[in-house]
Length: 159
Picture 1 (spheres, rainbow, N blue to C red):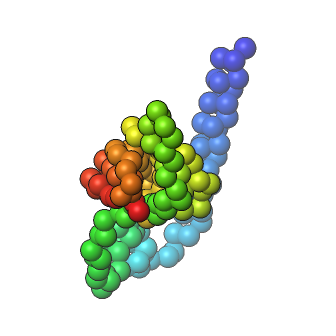
Picture 2 (picture 1 turned 30 degrees about the vertical axis):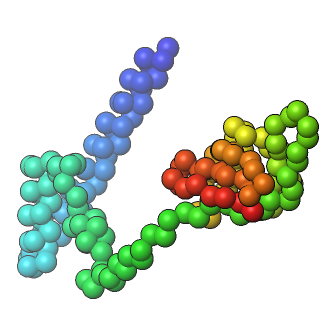
C-alpha cells in the first residue's frame, strides 16, 4: 500500500514537471519576433550551462563566499592578557582545640556558611573566574590554617 502511494506521488511529480515544461515552451513560442538582447542571451546560455553541468554541492556560492570573507575592513582583535584565577575568599572564624582531640578550625568561604574542618579535609569553593576549585586543609596551628588549592597551584595560610 505504501509502495502504491510512492508510485502515485512520483507519477504526479512527473506529470507536474511535464506540464510546467510545456507551459514554458509555449510562452517562448508565442514571442518569435523578439530578438534576444545581450541580457536574454546571457541568461539563456547560463540556463543551458546549468542544465548540462550539475552544480557542485561542495563548492560555496558567490554569496556564501562573500559572507565568509566578511566585511572588507575587519576590526582588529585586541587580546587582553589573561589574568590567572584568584582563590576564593577564605576567612578564619576560629580555632578549636580540645584536650586529646586533633585541632579544628571554623572557616568561612565567601557567600557560604561557616564550616568546621580538620587537617586533611577537602572542601570546594568558587575561584574568581567562576571555576570550582578543591581546597585541601593541610595544617591547623595557632599561626593559622594552611590550605592548598591544587588546581591553582597555590598554598595559602589563612589567619
